Length: 66
Image 1 (cartoon, helix red, strand yellow):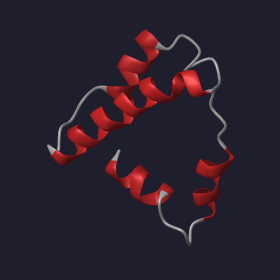
Image 2 (spheres, rainbow, N blue to C red):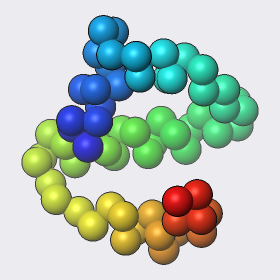
Image 3 (cartoon, rainbow, N blue to C red):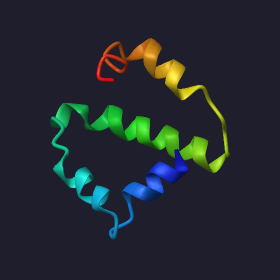
Image 4 (cartoon, one colour):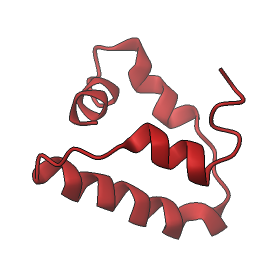
């Protein structure tokens, strides 16, 4: 996750602009702030979690896009 965050925040990388193109409704702001904050804490702890399994369980459309 840390590597992906670094990649997305590198201004030289073409993927940097994707973050600016995301347009989320204001009602989603709080949940995304909590979500990203939790990921930040896990990165600082060097934690390893089964992220894919959790996303498959809690986000039904996660695997449908593949």
